[in-house]
Image 1 (cartoon, rainbow, N blue to C red):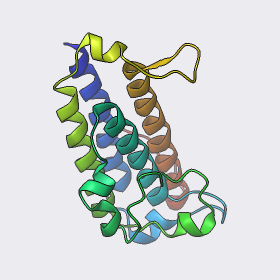
Image 2: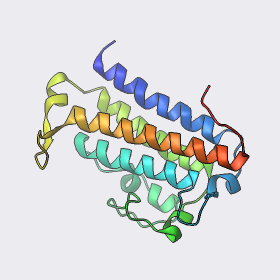
Image 3: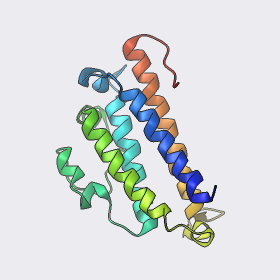
Image 4: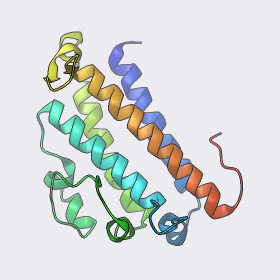
Length: 173
């Protein structure tokens, strides 16, 4: 197994976990927030996909699917490539459409673009420095691992909220 295969597998596991979280869920469940300042499943999945889209598009040198493929319009939002949910308040969180098909469709589009980029990845590309604001500087490889880590964290949060909605323990099989 090469590096690209390991990365593809990691991203696919996130997608598989999203399918479990969404399986049988209603729009009401996807919009549920345990507190008015908390995030919904819909927002968590939208946010993890936005960050994934932004970060991988940047390192691949591509426009974001959010803007380029019209996903912003499908969500009824402005095609602002900087809007990833950071700093969203309760109104913005509540404004994310609780539509499993739309959320998974966007995620699948981003995953497809990611897999296309991973088809081109080399050890040299993974070592390419992309951000010198940090010590040590951030490489492509570190950024990809960061996206995987962030996505895994948020899909776990979404699963937890799903458990709260159903008032039962939730786990991935």
